[in-house]
Image (tube, rainbow, N blue to C red; front, side, top):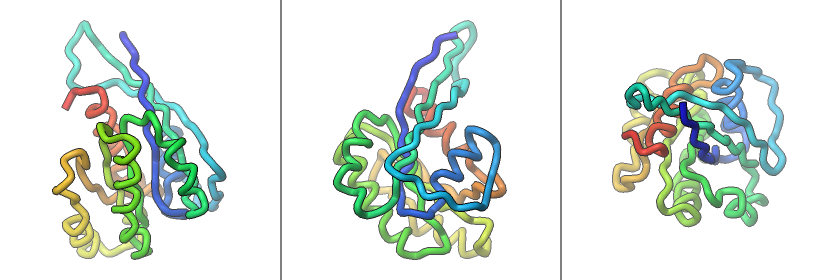
Length: 177
């Protein structure tokens, strides 16, 4: 089995759940104790890629960069974003201002990585009414930007769509979709 390595970044305002999404994906765990990320924290997870036929099984080692969400961090963020094949832009559905800043995060990522791919995670969906989630999903599709692959309502607490967003990004970065 061959393994390739790709860097992905989780980007979003503070407190949107970036660290919790990573922890749910990498460790299959959730904690509701808030710990603010300072600078960057790097996690790793190797996933088997879908759509690869035997005997050429291929796996992808994801180097997952959890970036600090504070505004004072914006000046050094491009340094941390450099070389990423993809990003998950995270917003908190219970905080409108985090939804409004998603375009800013998307633009910053594409300025540094114009050939990268993005998945949008509208996180903390377990804390919001289902019909409102559906409306948010339709409002935040970013269809005009072809490198934004999709928008998902996620929950690090319940695990909703967490594996899906990481696997979808992994397959795209490996050129399988």
